[in-house]
Length: 235
Image (cartoon, rainbow, N blue to C red; front, side, top):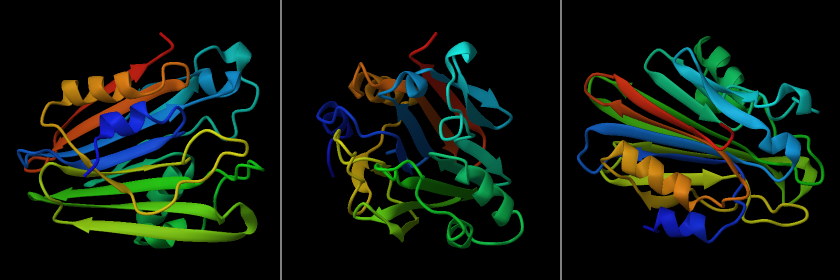
């Protein structure tokens, strides 16, 4: 298990990241999603609540130059399932799972982002909380080592997750030109019982210049009720 705080402090540009796990006391299914940006267009964003989920929107609409890959719903809720992604594949997963397809089947219809030369991976997570039972899965769709002619798809499923453990997946290994895609399994990280403390640790660990927005949700595994917190750099 690695220190999530150190992992974030030592990486100026992990890009967008998803964390999913279970609190040490075993009570909460936990997720966090953050976005970062290097361009004015990427940094000109905030998270806002949208029903049971959230969406991104321009902080200053007059400065929005290209909404295609930056305006989307990162979090949506379908019954007892919470979907968290870094793009409009949230809607794909929601719509196809609503038609009885699986998380993996839904993502087979999608690829990495068409933002050459980075070919940013699409990262996704799904949490299933029902009658005191919790499991989750994570996915990454990425180019074949920077070759856009092939799409590599990986799904990681975690049934009966261990209290205090979580997994962290993000789009980029680090800053670079072009940006190198995430590699390997989601990283094993620690989760906290305290949502406020966990949120503060994440926000304070993200690079000050590049961080844009953070969303954290704690779902009571017994009742399905949740608490959420949004932090936006643009106020």
